[in-house]
Structures are given as C-alpha cells and as structure tokens.
Amino acid sequence: MNRLSNNLGNANTIDDVIHQLDEIISMSNKTKNKLGYFASLYRMVTIKVKEGILNNQFEDGARMESLDVNFANFYLKALKSYLNGEPSSLSWQLAFRHAQSGKSILLQNLLLGINAHINLDLGVAAAMVCKNADIQSLYNDFMNINRILASLVDEVRDDMDRISPWIGFLDHIDPKASKAIINFSLEKSRNYAWNFAKKLAGAKEAEWEGLIKLHDHEVASIGKMVANPTSWMLKTGLWAIRLGESKNIERNLDLLNHNRFETAITDGIQL
Image 1 (cartoon, helix red, strand yellow):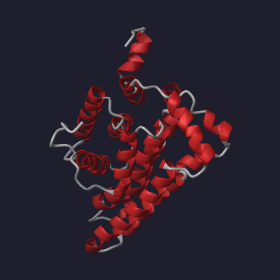
Image 2 (image 1 turned 90 degrees about the vertical axis):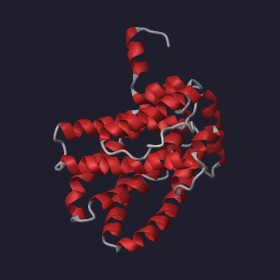
Image 3 (image 1 turned 135 degrees about the horizontal axis):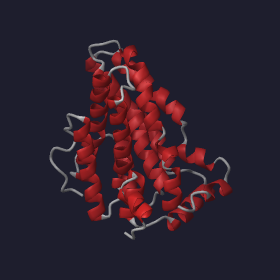
C-alpha cells in the first residue's frame, strides 16, 4: 500500500481525484487492504458530484469543483502521510488505524472516515475556497454537496447487508445500537461542518492552525466513541458481526464502488 504515487493529494481537478482514488482502490485490491473501503465509497460519491456539476445542479460549478478538489486532497494527503509514517490529523490517524486493525466492522470503518472527512476536512476546505468572498454565498452549494456525502451510509445499505450479513444483529442487542455506534446524526454533522467553516472564515488566518488543531481533537473524540463503544453488549455484538463479514476484499471494494462486481452479477459471471 505504500507504493502509491508521490502525487497523491495534489489533485487539481475532479478527474485527478477520481484517478487517485482508482490508484488507492487498485493497490487495496492487490494488497487486500481495508483502507480501500472508504476510497471505494468516496469514488462513487465524487462521480456523483462531478455529474451534478456537469448538470448545473450547483449555483457555481467552478467553485464547487474547487471545493470538491480541495476537500478530497485533505483525505488523500492524510492517507499518503499515514502510509509514509508521517504526521496527519488525529481524526484520520484513528480512522486509518482502525481500518487496518481488523477489529472494526465495515460500518465503523466507513463512519470513522466520514467523521474525519465531514466533521474536520469539509469545514476547512469550505473556508479556504471562500477566503476572498463572503462564505454565506457558499451555503446552498455546501449543503448540496454535504447531502450527497451524508447519503453515504444509506446508499450502501444493501451492499453492507451483503458484505456484513449479520449487521442487523445490532438491533436485536439494543434498539439504539446503531445510534450508539454512530454517536452523531448526519444532520448534526452537516451543521457542525458549516459552523466550523464560518468560525474559520471569521478568524484571522494566523489563528487557523490553532483552531484546526483544537477542532481535530474534538472530532477525534467523536471518532473514539464510534470506534470503541463502552457497552459490553454492543462490543459482543460487533465481535459477532465481524466474524460474519465477507473476507473477500476485492468483492467488497467492488460492491462499495458499484463497479464491475455489479456488472458481473448482472451478466452472471463468477468472479
């Protein structure tokens, strides 16, 4: 996994982002690495954003591409740093570490990535794009892209059932189990990211580094509750669910990416 391109995290266009995500997914397939799960899901969402721009679904398509690319580069740079043993945000370190540990179920891995990317990265990227403009002008497009990102979990629910067929066991343990794992609503995440973007936009640029570090600690704390729930019943359930999850990483990546595995099923091809 450490043989990824040196250009990772230096994307200039959405197509560059998609290409770099393809590179991560390809290496994850070769090395059977679960770090590719978030990248695979993220690729699908990035393509949807690109389609939205081409279909004029945003008020400012050029600005939206700039936001999307800046946003993606935070994740790509964090992954590159992590794989090279270099410092990265606490939130991403937590997500990457648990993805590789084998101790988390698929749902936790995806939520940890979403937590780091929406709750930390998105607000920073939005503030950067609006450095020389009123950030309020971005609000509608911000919420549009955020709704796409927030739909990650729901859009892959069927895929998750196939990868993790015992995921429904959580609700038998505790009707509130899913909320206990997520520990934050997606609605709150969207508002959380936007509020942080406004906070940065209203601060002096010299203050940004300190504000981002403090925010990173807060987001990492949310992630820790997702990664390590305190209920022993929930921990037992997660252990059982993990045992039942598919170990076929290539198949799982294709499912999350809605890629060739879906085509192969339709065509009746055995992978």
